Image (tube, rainbow, N blue to C red; front, side, top):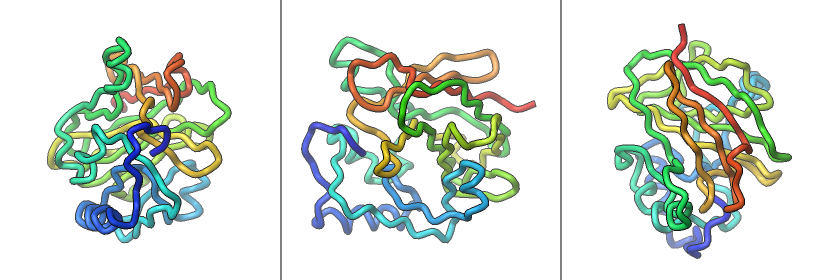
Length: 219
């Protein structure tokens, strides 16, 4: 994470907890990993996390949003539903989604359409189901799609026992993938066959136009 103001750093004394959480869940709740993925899939714009991958936390100090970070560190199953941004709510801007949870069926096919970006930084989205995301016949614990390189649309299949698709917006400012900053979030518009998301990465002076994408059910 980046841009947090609460001042809880990832120091060596909490590193064992982070490693244990990642090992137990196969999930990186912070979005700050060094993915090991196939060059072919990288060319398709997908940051894929194979089941056998070891997620290596970056060595530099990271800060987290203390108000929600603790819940994430305990693992994905604790996130029962949509998480709203407290930072924007405290400033009178309600309904900004920090972490989205969508109801899906096992085997449901969805498509991601990247519609627009307005940022010098790379913009993308992270997605995960408890039993994986299937793309091109391969199943991965989670995927990160970059708007400038991912196929449009990107079709995927949800593999889930709990019936949930988790997602949030990501970006790369030149120092690696980032997500879940103090001021990141998404405005959500419900469509007839899906959802449209207008995203912010950092800062309160937000037009929520850094990335616009939609997720809809595939025919």
